[in-house]
Length: 290
Image (tube, rainbow, N blue to C red):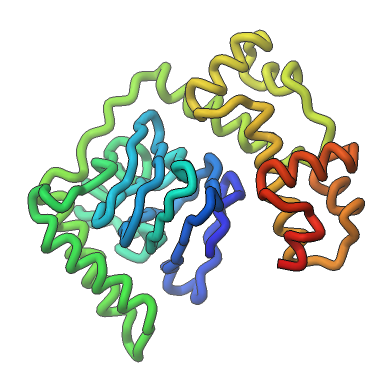
């Protein structure tokens, strides 16, 4: 199970010379709830089973079995469980450098660089009934298989498969111009500033007034802005983010529950225990044992 709880996610590649990773996420019993974040690499998801709510920039939709979900570099996105429904997906993340983004050729200048810079965007979901779906699915699953087994010289094959995948996406109009107004760009920057600040300061005693000042908003306007664009209240987001950090420490450290509570930004142990049990349906100690 992968945890995408971090906001600005720096993908850790097995081989930095081949910036590609493959991860599998199985959502069960309402977990994990993948909070808003972004990364500089492309993410392409294949849904094997079930449904979950995806939020990519301003687009909300529920996934279905067989969906191919496309997330451009730097797109704000989150994935939320729907009640206790199971959701099983594989995702590839790769930097456009793997396809020649840094080269000064026509493919990079006309296609890859505009995608990275936000002038182009993906159609967020390809359904099984949509144009060229069988070819795109076949190419995607082959690229996943190549990246998983990493046989000798796989780098050549992986590049070829990703280039073929992008050819199919462009040819079938799944990559389109992104018409974002100056106001839209400012809104995205405000959201990034907020979640960057939370990422850096979640251990501190944060409050709404402090976060509102980052956007230059009043507290009331900020709370409405946050809920509208991220789908949850700012307080709920901050609690979930801190709990995710606490869960990581429970899994991977020997710190006491009291120390973890403090390091995760909770200044009251009883409140930490109450919030943790509400979200994970068990106490921190039970979570660590499990």
